[in-house]
Amino acid sequence: GQNIDQPTEMTATEGAIVQINCTYQTSGFNGLFWYQQHAGEAPTFLSYNVLDGLEEKGRFSSFLSRSKGYSYLLLKELQMKDSASYLCAVREGDDYKLSFGAGTTVTVRA
Amino acid sequence: GAGVSQSPSNKVTEKGKDVELRCDPISGHTALYWYRQSLGQGLEFLIYFQGNSAPDKSGLPSDRFSAERTGGSVSTLTIQRTQQEDSAVYLCASSLDGGGNTIYFGEGSWLTVV
Image (cartoon, rainbow over all chains, first blue to last red; front, side):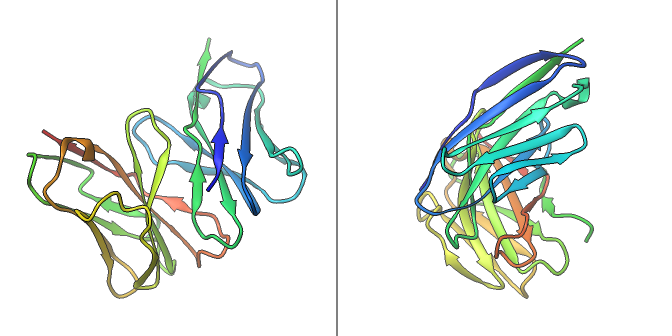
């Protein structure tokens, strides 16, 4: 299985940038996902990385370094609605299931 | 349907009772997953279906938990003789074929055992 670590909480100001780090240990990495989960709601897909580098999608970007077992999710121009939990999830080998970290709760302050 | 649909959205049950949680995946998705999320915790994998068969039941926490899927569509997660530690959100998800495609989640069934 995987050990997936991410910070528990982060706080940032509206309009600022926040970077959420995720480290993982796996024997056969085959993709990393980021999900956003607002309180009381379902997780929603944000991004997918399987090769090294940066994937940009609007205000959100995700980076992967397979050699370091490391990813980050970058949220730019923060808005109040970005206050949520951000979940890092890893797929291993040909496994069909995702293993999730405990999530990072981001609070955006005015 | 347009998204993954789960019912009931909320369930309060007495300790020792059985509960059934239902999941209706996205139309055409052959892979279906059940996860559990306890308060403040990450998502815990329970079981995976490919079509009607469950090749991986390794995440089911005890023999009180079982799941089935019929017609390659609707799935039911059953918890027998519920215990207080079963209180959690039970999330169902589906993907096109389980082969690496994105997993889409339902809103979850919030179970409280009193």
